[in-house]
Image (cartoon, rainbow, N blue to C red; front, side):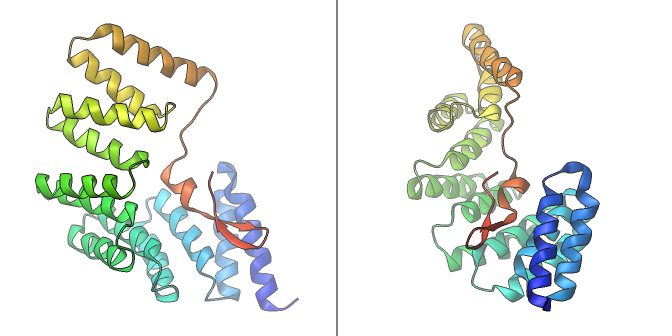
Length: 235
């Protein structure tokens, strides 16, 4: 078996292990073996980066995503991922550069707009943060994430009417959005609307009884082997 095929074999093994939280170390070893065999195997570096990120090994995660950018310089996703690592490292200036580069490559990239807005809010630039969330909503009105992020921003600044409206948009797009249900329930408590809060919390309890969980950021962005090559995982 040539090295390329062997690298794919190790990648598939890593993906199988990566689905099981008890086999993270095996997944890490498999992806590392994959890139030893093929230094250009970008999806393996992506998955390695997320494993390191989840383990709070930020420098290793940074190195992986930097390698992805070297291999795929025109893919905005790599810049979003590296920017997120820089955020975790409290390097907000570097994070902004990465998100701005992602937007340079794809002007309507929702994730980059949201990420940049979050950095701007951390820097205290409230108005620019709102503007970026609103731009993401204009470009992608059906997307839930920008509505949720804008809602939480309004919520933190005690703009309750605006926050309620955005949370309602979240639940219109995703009636099972756990954080949206929880936050809106808490907002109704603050507004003295206990009946509405109880209704939302009852919905949350029903979801919990069904074992419903939201897909997290890391799971949603890993690469998996597809029937015709490699594709981003949806869950």
